[in-house]
Length: 102
Image (cartoon, rainbow, N blue to C red; front, side, top):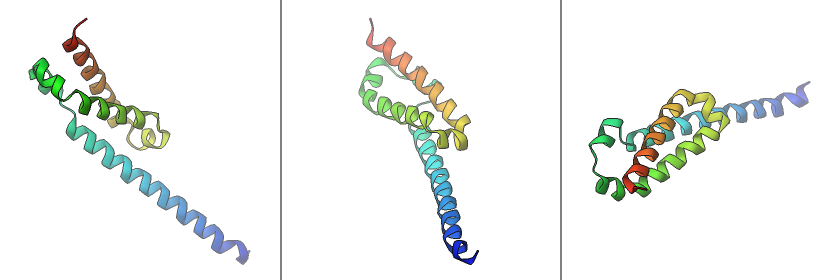
C-alpha cells in the first residue's frame, strides 16, 4: 500500500495542477478576447473602412473563439462566456460580409 501512495499522490497533484492551469488559461483567453472584440453598438457605429482596417484582427480573434468552443475543457469552465463571444463573432462575420458587398 505504501508503494503506491507516493506515485498516486503525485498523479493526483499533477491532475489538479492541469485542471487549475486549464481554468486560468481559459479565463485569461476569454477575458482578453472579450476585451478586444467590439460590442454590437461599436460595430454598428463603425464605417466599412474602419471594419476593413481591423478585419484581420477580428478574424484572428474569432478563430481563437472557435478554437475555445471546440475545446471541451474550455467549454466546461467558461461555456457561457464562449457562447456569448461566438455569437458576437457571428455578428462580426455577418457585418464584414455585408461591408465587402456581393
